[in-house]
View (cartoon, rainbow, N blue to C red):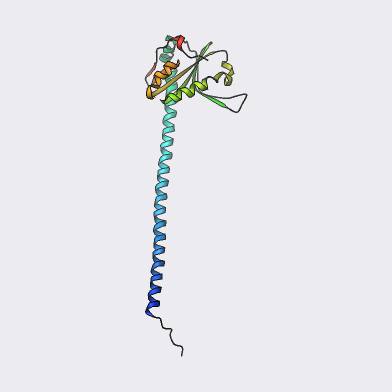
Length: 200
């Protein structure tokens, strides 16, 4: 008759230790998986909240941009332009044109014009000095993109709700027409001396 194999206490103890280690390893893996799953849920929730915030911001910005333009073209606003010497009879907004000489595009937020003059308006929620510098560089190229206005005098103008670090004073000193608005109701134009306006 075959004898049962006898195990020493040392061998049994070693197997138990190995078994416990294996169990702990599996538990650690499960804890890691659970933690990773929770972190992924948090990240997905944050991404979803960020997407909603971006969409909300875009809707608000587009709404304010539309309101900017509506304010810009009201009879009372156009009357302000007449006071500084510009009798506007045509307007346009969000105009994009591709260059005939390259693959570049140019975008104009809004334009106000008559037979001899075109006012190019850059709309900003918050305006910084670098916005003004960039806009001036772009405006210099306007006639090469919009050849239909090549015979008009082009005046750059900036419109914003907030001007950071005296950006409005900076723009005024550079010769831009400075427009202030709350995006909904209030609209004003800085008093301008025509001889100091920058023209292209």
